[in-house]
Length: 388
Image 1 (cartoon, rainbow, N blue to C red):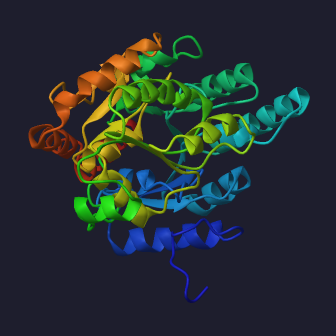
Image 2 (image 1 turned 45 degrees about the horizontal axis):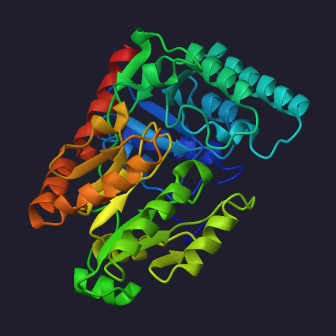
């Protein structure tokens, strides 16, 4: 494995090696109450987990990426008698991903729960971070909701990123208040390159200095409201031809559900479409070139894109949801009612008040309140208390 970077990716079949290495590192650091935290699934296209675990080693926790549920028992057994093993679950979409048959989905659900039960029975502890009410575009929502509930019942901690999570998920599953730990989503300041100036960014993506640029970043999915955004933008463009530009950048769903919307983007001369995943180094171009980030989502529990925009000092248009209200202030954001299609147009018109340096400074200042190291230290402090 020379030339590889430990921890950069979960090594298939090497969980034992990685866990033993983590235990040695904890021993050398003379950590009190050493704890190994195996996390699954490991997301490499988003630095969220790295930010959440920023203070892990300082807190006596060693993070180890797991490749699949088949690794859970190997990981636990390697810790036996040497450190407390914590299984930290994140996105649950992976459990039923790609399954089209309900009987197969039920069998996969039962097998996953069995693996969790074995882990707990052998002395392991489970922690779950809730990223979504249900996985986006899931094939079997009832089974996904049951899966969420089963995980809650086996967890010692349910980590929520917004205080309103319990209410938001109540129609699908219940979370005992005693298990909840609230640690907000960290900002992305310094998590991505940010060296390109506004003028260079605008030149690079092909927009003029005097144009108002709205940016929608992230995976292009039906629930994200691109159709309503295009309708609202068409109205604004007709009122002020050539003055406003919409940038849409992200990987579209492969199932064809957004293909018609992509065609609409390509036909509009004032819509710049990049229908692919945006590299880390190019994110700065789309964010620094923009005047306002638009999140036209019909639903959202936690938005990393909002924190990303704020981290680049970018004002935003966001849905009026309890989760977003916990993050924004009106000096850098405008909200719209996702239940009324015309309200997004009103919000886009109103957002002209944010076209000033003060709004950008307010967005950045608010982002700084979500410091990754501070939040990570709080997260592990809470875990330590629950373990005790």
